[in-house]
Structure formats: C-alpha cells, structure tokens
Image (tube, rainbow, N blue to C red; front, side, top):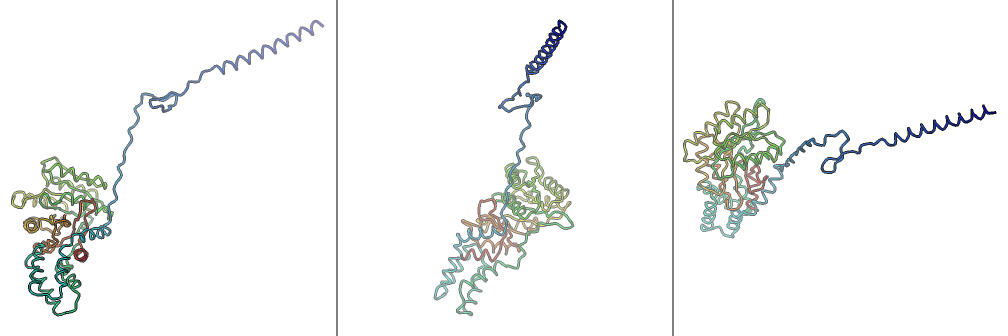
Length: 370
C-alpha cells in the first residue's frame, strides 16, 4: 500500500515539473522584445535594416513639351487677324464702287496703292488692268475684278513651298538672314514649331554669337518643343557654330537644320562677307536648301533696300514677312517679290508662338477685302 502511495506522489511530482517547465518556456518567448520600425525625418516608415542617414535620390523632372499648332489652322486665324487691318481693301472697294469712275477717282486709287507700298510699276499695271476690265465688262462686279487682279499681281504661280528636305538622306538646311530688329530669331523659333507640328526632326543653330540674348532666346524656343539647339561661345565664329550644327544634323539623320545668323547691316561689307562665309562653310557638309530673308513689313521701302543687298550675298530663295498686322500696309508683299523675283513664303501677324503661317496669295487678298 505504501508503494502505491509513493508511486502516485512521484507521478504527480513529474506532471507538476513538466507543467512548470512548459510555462517558463512560453513566458520566455513572450518576453522577447521585437524592435519597432525606425522612422526617418518626415515620419516615413523605414524597415529595421534601413540606413536612416541615406540621402534620397532627387526626383527627375521631365519637362512638358508643347504641341505646336498645325499650319492649316494657323491660316484661318491669321486671315481673321489680317482682315481686321484691311484698310487697303476697304479703300479700294469704296472707290471702285462709285457710280462714275472719273479721272479723279482713278487718281485716288493710284494714290492709295502707292501709299500701301506696292510700288510705282505694279501700281500702274494694276490700275490699267482695272480700268480696262471694268470698261469692257461693264456690269462686272468690282469686288470680283479687284480680287482677281490683286491675286494676279501677287503671282499665284510662284513656288511658295519651304524646301526643308535634303537629297540622298541629307537634312534640309535652312539659312535664316536679316537685320536686327526684324524678328529673325523669333521667326527661327516659330519655324521650328511649324516643322515639329509636321512631325519633322529638327536641330537649331544659334550662329548669332555676337548677341548672347539671341542664343538664350533660341534655346528657350527649342526647349518648349524638344528641339536641340547648338550654340558656341559668346563672340565666337558663327561659321563654326553653323558647321557643328549641320554636322550634328547629318550624324543624327535629322530632317531639317535651321541656322539663325547674326543681324547684318547692309552698309557693313565685312559683316556681309562673313555671312557669305557661313553659307560656304555649311555647304562643305550639305547643300543649303532654303535661304529665308526675314523682313519687317512695317519698314516699307527701306525693307526693299535690305532685301536687295542680302540677295546679292546669299541668293535669297524666300521671304518671311513679319509684323504684317498693325501698321503694315500690305503692299510690301508685291513690292518685295518684284524687287527680288522670289516669293513671300511665310507671314507673321502676331506675338503668339504659333502666329507664323505659310503665305497664300488667295487667302491674303481675301483677308484684305474682308
């Protein structure tokens, strides 16, 4: 009996020992401390092994590129603006609509055309054509006759296409020239927008190295539409900058390289010779496909003097006529074409980035007569 009791006591003691041991094990595990996540400045949670002293990578800011307006919609808007300053068209229609066209009326028409900077010879031709047609056709609508003769005077047969493509896979090279103050650098920037709107790849050359502001201005134009601008040191060799830009364009296989040149005064023979040098250096790499002369439409006959001198140096192939709204008289379009024998290809009518459009003779006359 005593052995039975002793066995029971031993068994109970063993069970009690097991229970105590298991309890202590659980207690030890529950007492293990887990380090909380550390924080870095700004209350941003970091994993336990994070390096709180690490410098975060700077965010990469991707500039938002602008989407230039398509040329077709530009023509509509620019035509509306030009119509607002159509004093020439209104004056002509008012005189031609008189019941009796006497000599005094025809003299007034001639004075109006001369005052619009059309030029003596074109004015005499237009007046003669109008007199003949209105006398012969009698009941002809004066507005219709005037429109047809003005379009003929501007010459719709001229090739007004911008030659911005090269041959044999080479880029088109557009050389932009003109005196300071005509809006030349701005025109280069706006032309780049037209080309980008047509899905062309473009490189710009800031070859006006004598004005740091010109290179900076062109750089801003390029950044807005994602176009690379090649520039050199201030006061550096313009021909070298132009050469580097064309080489970049050839190496990259871009569609068009547009070269902005320094504004040249027509009475500075040395500077004009330098402009000729720029063209010669460029053509060691690729032919120049277009030479655009930028003229301020408000300068009138003085602009014709500039045009003639530039054409003798670099063989101008087209005119970009800026500031045609406001105080511009409109007739400069006819006069400059007659003076140079080259067409007006681009017109600018405002300060907006897309206020430059291809010139169309019919749309221009319609705007004048609106």
